[in-house]
Length: 496
Figure 1: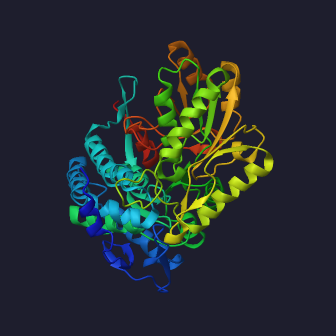
Figure 2: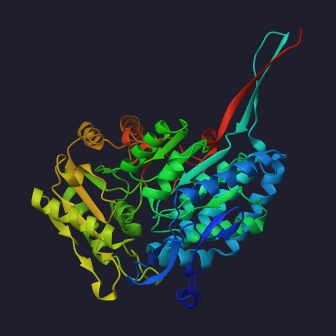
Figure 3: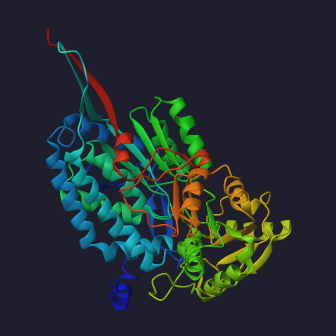
């Protein structure tokens, strides 16, 4: 159980000027440039991070390559890596409250959600892949008696990981844990808006026994630090979660450099579909509200398009608006807060721009729509609902990545499926129905990597996460994640 007094003791701890984490130690950026860390809680500068340049990225990649070639991590028995990663999971849990509060000060996620979704989730992810290390087998091919065909799984070498600011520890762990478990070295580039907890993760990894150079963290701007990582000729694979525009650039960097593998998870415009026979409309309304407004809508799988069957539309909207208006927006380090801060002034401006465009295009504002708590200096926005949203409107087509919900009505199953698929994205979806046949038909009809039934969110590590269409390719989570960080090698042995 979280304790408010313990949270308050941590909320003002000095952050200071952060350095890069390269070769198992903190190092100064070559040109000593820095970026301010602005807390979305109150808009104040609480420290700085290093703004790494190309030379810094090259140093980190060189350290990672040297560590991989040395073999202290890549070549021992898998059980050795397992022991270290289990210790790292324990250290993350031991420091969970410190990490959660530090992360909230950096990106504004409400503490109740951040504690579970960030350090505790990350610890679980490292533990899952640690336990999986010695349970992933190679293959023996069905050959003639005079031949032995073996298929080995081998680590790629150096993996570059670029993660977003909304859940840096959770998403970072989805990439770093399987990459390390497979025996790779990693260079991690956090978002410039949320780097603090991942720099701390570097220290915990060293404390757990991860060898020098195996795990490195370089901070800075995507246009400089991220580009340098993407173009580096000694990076074997890139794993990225973020925007489609940046994902396209990473593909270009791969083509311009060494044809490194690129795995992209690019967000979505996910449909949340409520049929008239939903088993519990009150539950559906509450879960739907939290499915878009938690973390101020800054969730890649957020149910940002709500489709409601016409016969229950008015009744459901009443329930949804009631739930939404009861949500408390405010200080994300207050345990009573339901939705914290938008992560930056820039993102808040974009969110409000979507509201203005929706009103201009004729959507009807039924809740929220304004910046609030401006006197705090922080970046807060009311949970916002528009209905009468047509498929052609910007709000129905583009990912807001903020607390803005687009609601439309449908008549029947066929129209629901058509509206659900009227998007270039295909990351997640949900269907609320008591009819098992309807649920199965909709799961098959909707083009999305994850389809929830009578719930939204919460799929655990045992299943993959990834998208269709412009939501990207490559899967995080589950044992399938190992496919991104290993290569197959055939040994064809003549026994004659």
